[in-house]
Length: 364
Image 1 (cartoon, rainbow, N blue to C red):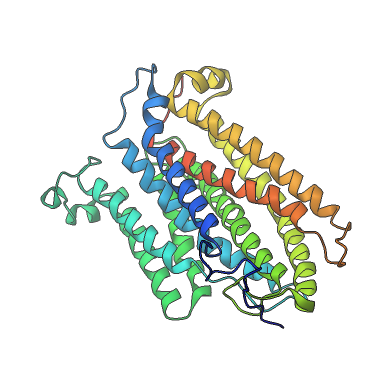
Image 2 (tube, rainbow, N blue to C red):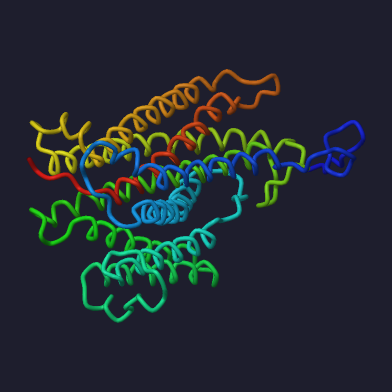
């Protein structure tokens, strides 16, 4: 494989006025993260306007912490999922994108710690360390679940740090179970049924969102034909790029087939959970007159957009038989809508974080 060195006529990163590769993407990521943070922070006031419902203390901050926790769960779950799919492809390149699991574990640990501090003060935003009753966490169901999530993220980070990333599956599963139990207190009607639905919903959503992120990162690396895990832009595609492009198309197609099942399971459990909280005869009214219903409606519309983008990417992938002049699969046809799907899914995660912080509608 030939190393191409930047010259005056190429887009390098040493010349005057030249940008380092990835600067535009870094700025785009920063903008998207900022917008994603604004949804849970500013969304409660818009959702609660005119409903007569009282917001919980610190609802914006709690929604932001839950968004961070969900994101931190999706990233390592998606990596493990797609790595397993890639291992089933014969002749696929050995290169893998650099893992984000350790960063996700750190972010999840901090988010879980922040949420635990709220539980430790009686579901109030603590004004100082003296108001946090750490011992009280052991005396309540929500407190024990919060401690479980803190310890699970810490364990997941340690497993990655000491070279056992596959073993993350156990603490990550514990986090999903804790979230499912937390969402359905024992005073609820048939809480175990609700927890089971939420567990399937959270698991399938994490596989779908995190899997797509890592699949596109892998596809991008393979398409360049880079022999390193860093995916630097200084390598020419070469013959390895042809193999990488074909393997990338196969990986995206394999992910697409599994993602269709994940989407179906996510949709079915979401509808079932909604009907448990909003009986059919009140759904339309609550979707417009309660904060929970309004945000749920926004989430449904976003999922429709995501589904349309997914179908577009899959349709283009099936037509990838049309090839470039070099004979390599033209993955850019499927890559663009799939990248837009990732952005839309990021917004869905932020809206989901907001949804968990709002008052649950009553059964009219």
